[in-house]
Image 1: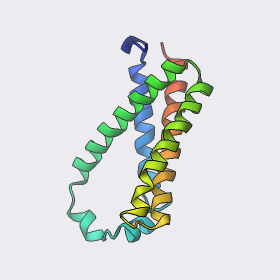
Image 2: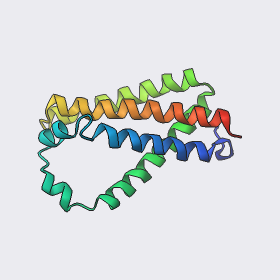
Image 3: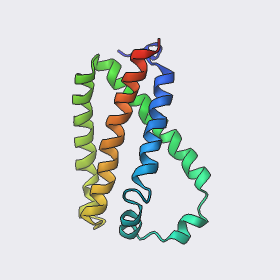
Image 4: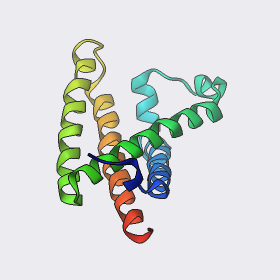
Length: 138
């Protein structure tokens, strides 16, 4: 059983920041924002009218929670290799479950791949960042 005392909370926070940075880059002009907006049928006016500070804050809480969960996975399995294997299964289950959107909501395959790609890249980076911070800080 993983005790909360074994969790490095600085590592959780730092990994969450890395996860947010990846999200900002992933959904920016550098990568996929134009394609994502077109496929999601979101126009720039909708983004301008939204409360981005609130959305970013809520996104950080979600990413912080994910970072904590991945820290628990790491401590439960006891090694980076085992945690990455567990993460592969988690990603597999999420990808399969999310494929329902392809079937029922008829979302474009490209949109699905953009979203799943973001999950894979950010989740692996969050886990590895947590491990790196945990191995340098007490």
